[in-house]
Amino acid sequence: MKITRALISVSDKTGVAAFARVLERQGVDIISTGGTANLLRKEKIPAREISSFTAFPEVLDGRVKTLHPRVHGGLLYKRGNAKHEAEARECGFEPIDLVVVNLYPFEATIAKPDVTLAEAIENIDIGGPSMIRSAAKNYESVTVVVDPADYDAVLENMRDNKGETTLKLRERLAIKAFVRTADYDRAISSFLNKEQTTDASFSLSLPLALRLRYGENPHQTAALYGDFDKYFEKLHGKELSFNNILDISAATNLIAEFEEPTVAILKHTNPCGVGSDADLRKAWNKAFATDKQAPFGGIIVCNRPVNEPLAKVISEIFSEVIIAPDFDTEARTTLQKKKNLRLIRLTVPASQARPAIDVRSVCGGVLVQDADVAGDATQNVVTKRRPTKAELNAMLFGWRVVKHVKSNAIVYARADRTLGIGAGQMSRIDASRIAIWKAKEAGLSLKGSAVASDAFFPFRDALVAAANAGATCAIQPGGSVRDEEVIAAANERNMAMIFTGVRHFRH
Image (tube, rainbow, N blue to C red; front, side):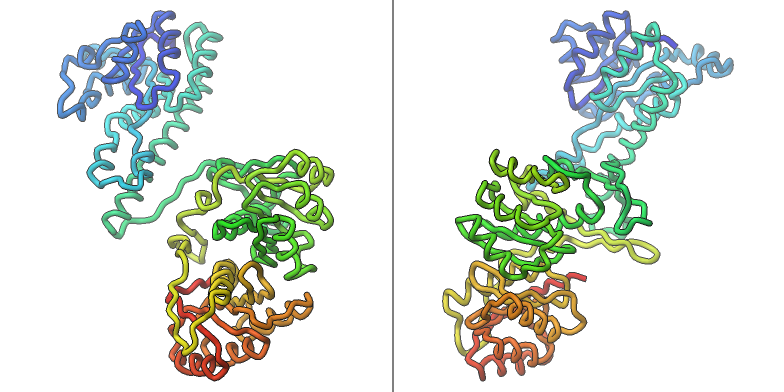
């Protein structure tokens, strides 16, 4: 049916005046509310106040204005249904053919760091979702628009169909409308559930971002959901795979730990080597020296723009992905010679890209937890000897890295680089042995190094092995029933040791 009457009530007023002006020129009767009506009148676009349409005033500070039978009757009655048509005439329902509504900015409100519960509740829209759902339910006759990005499509559709919209467009917009109200309600329930610590269910809805060629393995189907492209921009190379995306996320989480210029290399989400230096090429040399075999086909991340000297040395090995805040022109020229190499620009600081929650599927459901973003380690010295400044810096460097290594995890480090990394072992002593072996293979001395453990040393054996390898200090969470034995072993070897009180398991 031809659109003769539209109800426009928007929080996001982007483009609404231009949209309404075209409707008005086509003879559409426009009804509006509050701030939207004021804007349209300011733009010299005739618009009836909702109260004149309903013959009922806006009350309760605007909480009740569109919740009225004339609004919902005008949206919901079935055109062409004799009974509905008769009842609509009897009740004085005038048809509303187009609804343009977007909602109070609840998500933006709760994103504020200092938002109060009262402020959040005041930004829960009631009338908007009600109109959207009524219009969407009757999409056979009513067009509903919830996104300013669809204004042009509606106008074009009307222009091509003599003032009408097609059923195909109305159906698509109705589905989009129901998705929007579902997401809106989910944001509200999730916020209130967290604020009030109730026993409500967990739900999550994310838009499809990308269909992937396959998942972790070729026989698995996969897709990416959410707003990944808000944080990462692919500048060059093949399309991203499922495993690439996992690695990019892991690399971003790791590099977010460092403020000083740092380069890290990862493989299968585990760090292979990390190095810091004002000279990025030297930072790379430190990271690469930790393990010169594992980086083949790995992921490289840098927290400074990649320059030409770094690009040249990186290009000497095969890498899957390089992530950085930017790439100098010369660096891009060098790296883009590799057709398949993916260059990813991190468009926000790494700390802003880290997810707030961690969701994992399990048999029969999902596990949900806060992301592990605990800050700097508590420096609780538990040994007779306190660490030197150099030892303390080495321990803290190792601690920032070990947090991102699969458990059981051991990292040997100096103040500006990793020396040996042992990941994902069933016993902590085996993780330590692997880290020591890796350092030996790389020709790196562990003499005077720091050893970092993601969880407590359950026995003294791993600490003794570290001391025998050359470590002079250790950093670990503490909390074992044998802590005193481990502390005694450290004292016997004149080692300094810090308990952080924070564990960093990565299963």
